[in-house]
Length: 192
Image (tube, rainbow, N blue to C red; front, side, top):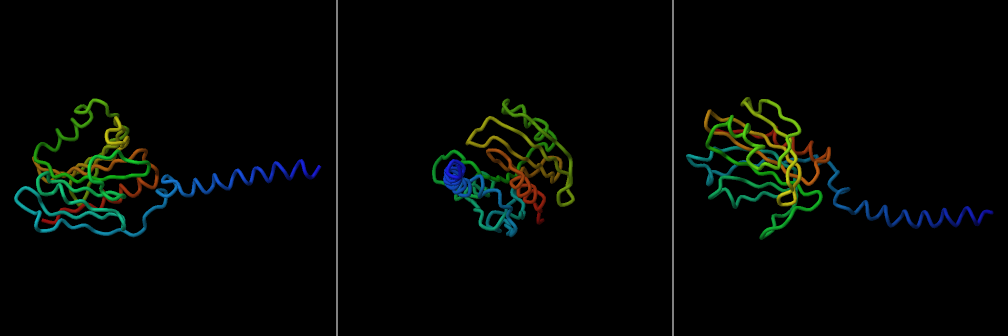
């Protein structure tokens, strides 16, 4: 009788151990740890010019800054993975934040956001203040371009025809990623 009970228990434990190892090693499990230490990025003076104001943003320690697009494109990448050379689809747990400086109508930018791609669903939209400036935050789900399916966008108004756009992308926003992204977006400051 004991053998009939012990054998299934033993087999069950042996089946659980490899599964628990796999879950502990998976990117999803690893990305659930909320970052506690943040660093501050300040736009270097070499990029500040008449069209790109100086700004700062906080990001989790250990994440990667990619300034290569600041020269011609006026945007900065912050990722939780090393920036690959060449095109690469995002993996589960990858988070990318892009900070753009835009010239144009602040209102038209965020009001026209969903329609320009046509395949985007807005989940939530709200007004807020960031660094004492008018801002709009939009939560959306998209078409999965580049492997990212969900995003949080924050538009920060400088004046009637200049604004910053902060966009963070993920495959599926987890509560930890949402907290991290919102902390980054809230930390944005214009240093003029």
